[in-house]
Length: 104
Image (cartoon, rainbow, N blue to C red; front, side, top):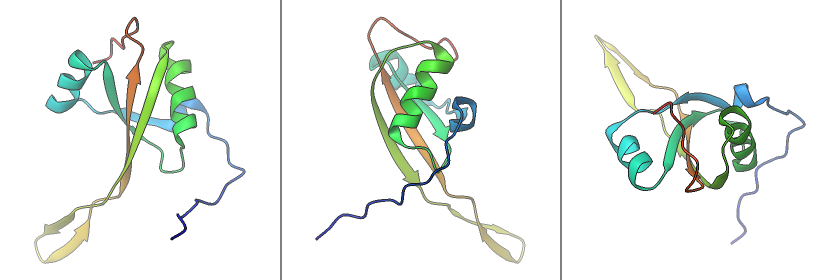
């Protein structure tokens, strides 16, 4: 069965447009201290290469690998109305052993 290949776009994102915000959670803090891996919410259009370049440029570090996840929106209810939170993309960036990000 052929894999789905995303359509290429001519849109190029600047590094500050790729990374939306850092994800500071208990699991993320554990990952940052044990595995030197940091989690970010990133733009839905960003690729792994975009995330790698953005982190290296913004934080002046060496990135070893990037894992991405597309997160679905969760159902939410307010009074009588039903809705969904927005879907978003998460990136877990593993850094070289000699580099760290002081943001976390």
